[in-house]
Length: 155
Image (cartoon, rainbow, N blue to C red):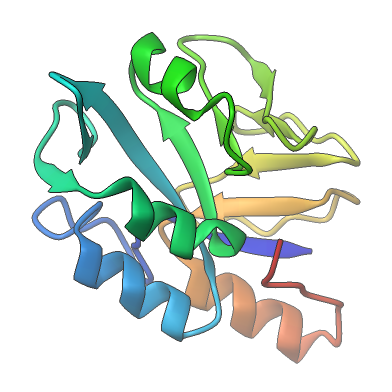
């Protein structure tokens, strides 16, 4: 199972650090993929959940593309990433969507074999799914290591 950090969080939500470059890099250094929130406004890319917060160069994202799951926060961002090899998706209130790499990205408690289920709170997953995205990735990693279950951390 792939374990994906939600906005760089490792052991709970930290709204003051999530989606910042150093926070994201720390999660990647610890072996996790990271779901990031990306905006495109005024010909620039920004990280941030509810609004564009941190200006970012597209080259930074490209350099980390094997570890990132990019949640486009506006349609113009998705349009700008179309011709790239970046794994991105966009959704609003959909129960599930499909990433540019063909994975399902689903709301909590929706389990698809080729899918990632968002589970920001720690809740044991017993379903056969591709991955989990959580604020508690350290707990998930410890659980899967303890129970000798296969985990994957690279796209």
